[in-house]
Amino acid sequence: MERELNSISKVAIIGAGPAGCMCAYFLQDICDVTVFDYASPLRTLLPTGGGRCNLSYAEYDFKELAENYPRGEKFLYSVFSKFGVTETIDFFEKIGIQTYVQDDLRIFPVSNSSKKVREKFLKSLNKVRFKKEMVSELDFTKYDYIVAATGGHSSYTMLKNAGHSIIPPKPALVGLKTEEKFPAGVAIKNVSSCGFRDDLLFTHEGVSGPLIYKISSIYARREFPYAISFDFCDRIDLQDYLNKNPHKIIKNLLADFVPKSFAEFILFKADVSPDEKGHNINAKQRDKILELLNRFPIEITGTAKGGEVVTSGGVSLDEVNSKTMQSKIVPNLYFCGEILDIDGFCGGFNLQNCWSTGYAAAQGIRADLGV
Image 1 (cartoon, helix red, strand yellow):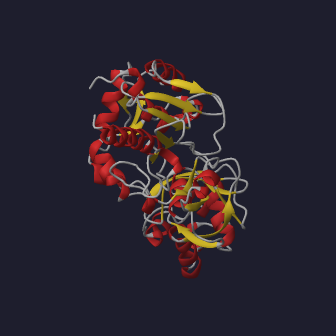
Image 2 (cartoon, helix red, strand yellow):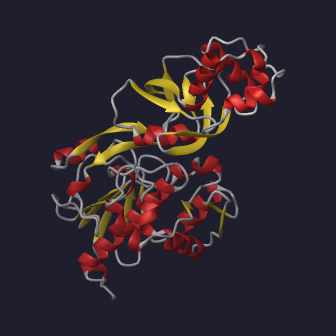
Image 3 (cartoon, one colour):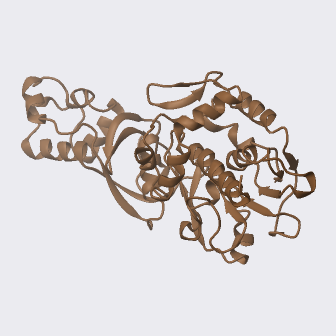
């Protein structure tokens, strides 16, 4: 639909992150789009995926995909059904970014470079105007539509003043602090806890690694302290191991299941000498060792500093139309990205939220314009 220049709708997008830029891309052909940010556009894309840019996750069923969001799952059904992983891959190929899928289903650009993704994405925004400034109020006298797409907390006051409810932000996808000190630097693979199985890392502050990021996300709004337990080796017949290895010292025997330094830590807690031979381990000691291997208790006292990837919290989803991303409170105000109370696990899910809600907000505005 062709429009005269003086009738083109003006859109202000607050936030030049992945969501804001995605929204701008799908509006630039029909609207006069200005994107506001106090820093460089798409700067937050650069560290993603360890600098390789983990664009998404290869789950093509929108309901299955949405299960990876502790907050926002049902809200995202409508969003992902319109613009999911397939559409995301198609978009990036359209702007010149080929992708591939790792064995763990994470999707990356063939270039393995966040910098190159950023360069090509910005090049595709050739009709968009960027302004390096902070926005502190919703000014509908200058713009027909405003899209709030800030990833952080900078817009919360402005949106609260406009009548929106803000779910207080809490750190998610972070390491966790513990009261007890563990052997720092010890990594253990395929550990089970809280319904998940993944790798665990002990740090000088407590625990970290992929398993902990999932747990910290699920429990982001839980009050500290809280207790969790870990299963390091599922259910094993420890007595059978002892019988078959009567002359093997216990720390070496347990090293078949956990790193030797952590085996010694477990034996210390079980009050068993790490150099005791298998045939000298009595039933009480065996049961205590087995309990620690299968139900190792840890008390979580807080979140570790410096590891926060995303936050849970933001604009209440009850106040946003999931089909259009439009505010139910302020006419012509739209939302996309991490400003919403949506957060996902590690693996490309938080960027997928940005791509999809950015597209949905643009489509919401296009529908309102009748194009």
